[in-house]
Length: 148
Image (cartoon, rainbow, N blue to C red; front, top):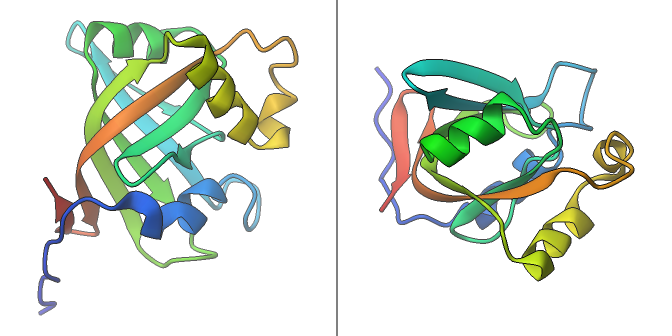
């Protein structure tokens, strides 16, 4: 039986390589980031190729679809994010937190600057919005590994 690792404070920087490269590592579809939201009690999941570790406390992504995910974040900011990057880590990581659409133009631009090129190419007019998620809990497999 596996022993639970010690739970530490939130510090997402150790996951940067795993999260930031999930879209481009390995075979297409093998590694990915998925965001789960809920709006009016209806769940939704969406692939987010632009997902990144923003800083020690936040994940970010560029929301180019401007559809269900954006509407859900505005209505109910509680999100779950799952990242699988077997090229860099055998674990599936799950992050839980509160998302917000970035209103500040300078911060929006800073997020855009860090979006990987393959994702920028899907929104050449830069019509999307930046999303930041303050993470309160991280799980690896069945164990909490970080928590506020």
